Every structure is written in structure tokens, then in C-alpha cells.
Image (cartoon, rainbow, N blue to C red; front, side, top):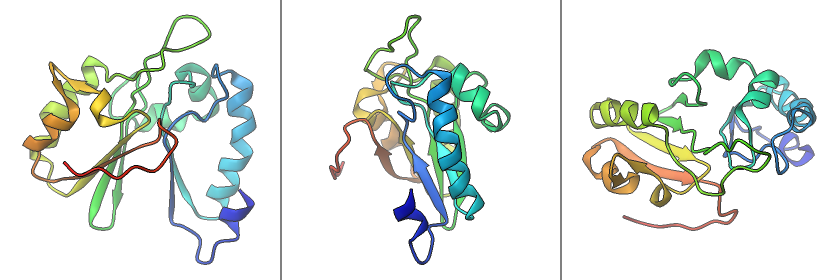
Length: 171
């Protein structure tokens, strides 16, 4: 955190691609993260958080209730962030399990798939999608998300964090 706050100029935005929690998405995980997120926000950095396979929506929303008010899909954490020249859409790829651990793989809920299938082909501005899981792991209906995006003329790119390393792929 200190390194971010020392940057000059400060970044205008920060995106967290999930796994804000440690292992099981306990309430204490989000209580621990809150002061750091608040420091960034108090410094003027707008923060957008996505859901990763270690997260749990209930405890997350208890600490960050604003996401329940702004999500595009009730019951999910889906954010649309207008940026200069493009929009950024943070998807919710968390496949939440009933026990302590969630499945490692990601998925998009039916409601999210329907919203994307309806909205993205006619999106008016260039847009980037982001999620914790890679686009090649996610589906819309029976097709892969990456293949679906070919029908979206304003799609500019996809960013994810699950692999925890930088990979650049062109499709």
C-alpha cells in the first residue's frame, strides 16, 4: 500500500481482480482489507473490487455494502466503470461453494450471461472486460466468452488475475 500512495502522480483508479480474502472469505478478511482500501480512496484513488475463488459474497458485502447498490446483476458483484475513452466492466466469476472452500474454476451466472449477451453486442463505447478468471474459462450459453466477444464490435480487451502472472494473448 505504501508504494501505491508514494506514486507521483497517484493513479486515478485501482482494480482488484478478486481474492481480496485469504482462503475462505471470512468476515475478518474483509475487515482487514478495509483500512487499506479506505486509504487509497481517501487519497483520491477510486477502487473497484471483483470476486475471486477465495472470496465469499456475503461477508464481502457486509464490509463493502456499496457494491450491492451499484451492481448490474442482483446477487452478483458486477461493476461498470466509465473511463476516459472506454468503459471497464468487472465481471463476477466466483463460483461460490456451500462449504468453506469454493471451486477453483470460475463461471458466469445465467443472469450475468443473459445481461452480457443482451448488452455487449450493442455497447456504444469501447469496453474492456475484467474478471478474476480468464475469459477462456468462462462461458456465455454454450460458447466460450472469448468466442462470444467476436460478436461485440466495441470489445477492446480482457484482463484477469487468477493466474497471478502477466500473459499477453492476442485473439
